[in-house]
Length: 325
Image (tube, rainbow, N blue to C red; front, side, top):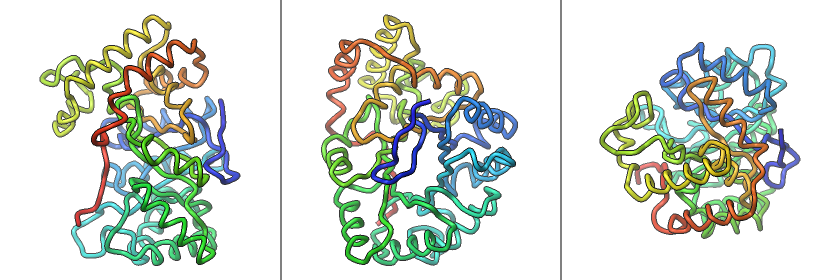
């Protein structure tokens, strides 16, 4: 396994990480635990979850799976998106974050998380309040590092400036939708992160499965796929991206690898990317993803992927999760 520093911190994370938003839904408890144990055995040390994934089932299942193996893992979770209908059940206020962290620790069966991330920018809460609350969590020992998610570059820069001015712990990472089908981070976020020492953690690295080539029609998604289980996902299945998926599949066939592995390997090569979190709903799928780490191909393949995906440097992101204004 290859390991990278997470931004400018001293923390080293596996180049491939495990995303767990399917655990407890598209992957049942038994399968989810098998997947976690398998990826740990194969050298992955980064596991990412959130307080809201599958109604908090993801965190609970991870807690079960890590019994006796907590020391093997860089464990990351998040809070800030809508958790409930109450007035303080979303956002990044001190009130909400402290309550959610304690609940996450209980579900995860641990007394600390390695990376605690704000799930999205909160325009209703002063950044000073959020950053002081996170700094207190680090000083208490409940959190080791802090990160952001779904922040615009200017929002992230504002946060780093406040942390520097007040002498607070700073964000070491940011999660963002990033893939061959969504290269919008390259416009502002990537150069910012390179300059400021912030590690990028891409989510949706396979564009929800589009880059595996399994979607041939928006009307007939494969049984068990994300689009099959979640009809709302159909909005992402435009013809341009499905054609990109077919092109990636063609290149993968010529290169003797799977299209998913090829797409993940391309993303691992991008500047500022620290770890790529990819989900799995079966042990076999997790094993297939692992092959991306050691994939070495000629420059002409990477250049062709750059060319094919160039249109997706512009326009709207594939996905972005924001609180209502």
